[in-house]
Image (tube, rainbow, N blue to C red; front, side, top):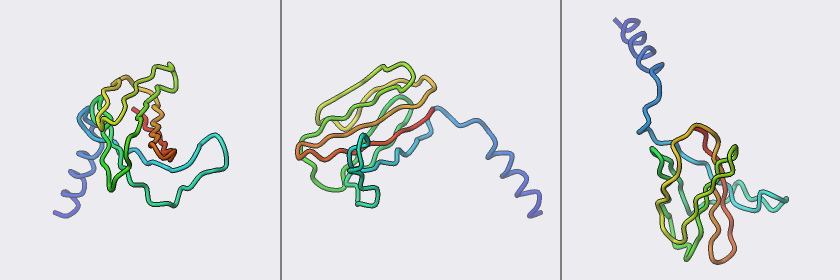
Length: 113
């Protein structure tokens, strides 16, 4: 019975990922263009992609900020100021996420569709 249950679970796990499934975007702090990276610092922002939307959640105050998402293949870019949800693309590819706060802190990460 256990073997049957595990087989059923394995088959269910191999199903194609739904478009509505969320992707956690792992953020790092610092400037990705130089050595000023702080990957082990507590990041006060979480970022999730779901079906064309990039959404931020704040664990503490960050003040004003700019959220920018760029398709790394096409260069297409979306940006908003101090709005925690950004409509982007659902096209496959790798997307660069960058958040810059008013105090100059930078957070970045990628997600792939």
